[in-house]
Image (cartoon, rainbow, N blue to C red; front, side, top):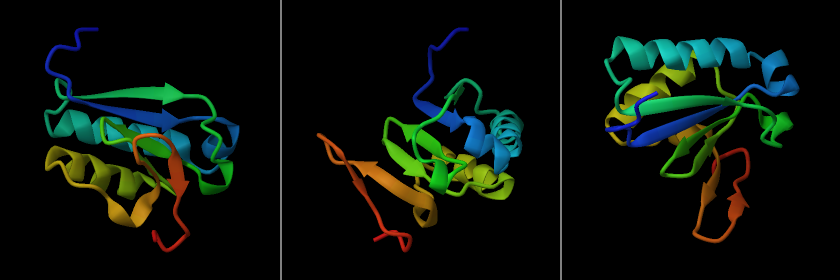
Length: 111
């Protein structure tokens, strides 16, 4: 696959717990939204195995921002792609964000 022009990478957890909670639908929705918006040359997706956040799954991680999104649904997945297109974050789903050296968990209110 040619990755010239790709500036964002979305990692889609498809571990056992996330799959049980709808990761297949989230993955399909995100990939379809990328395609329908013509963003396939800018946003690359990768299905991963467990990312270790089973209680918060399905999870999605967006790079280069390093933002982790929790409890994703097909609808929030589509919204995420639309926000990524505008270089915005889907704040209500942030569970972890990178501070340069480590990850700091947010509480369920995103604080």
